[in-house]
Length: 168
Image 1 (cartoon, one colour):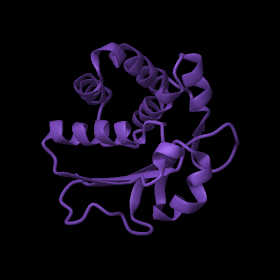
Image 2: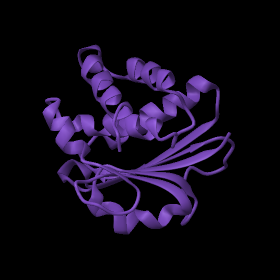
Image 3: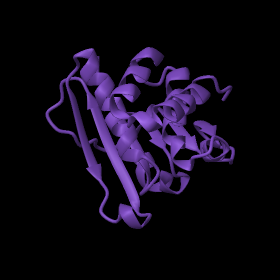
Image 4: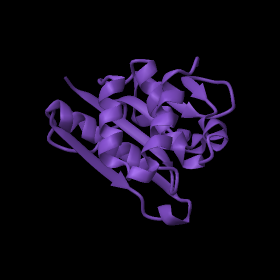
């Protein structure tokens, strides 16, 4: 079992929490996992890129055209980070525009749920719904429960389930 994933967004969107959830899922499965983050100016709305490698790898970095899955919380990062995705890799984008990949206006749905940051877990649900990740919904729920502060667990799970049941 091997999978290379990139998560791209901007500071404040929950890129790092989503990365931790995916990594925790791998740990819970007993799989080796490596992560790396680039988030220099993230606190000021700058770009954040996380890479996740599940399986036996020697480096956490993902080279051009090697990622199996790209989860884009911020569509504007697509031109910069899209080249990391394999030709046959799955692409999941938070957007209200048509185009390549699986597209959903996760930000709008998250705002309707009362918290814009929930778009990250909504996209996780969409990824699981489309079988883009090597995990089950139950494994995601367990990792969310492990990592989310108790006061946020309910809304995090609600966002995940909203994505899981989306029709995109």
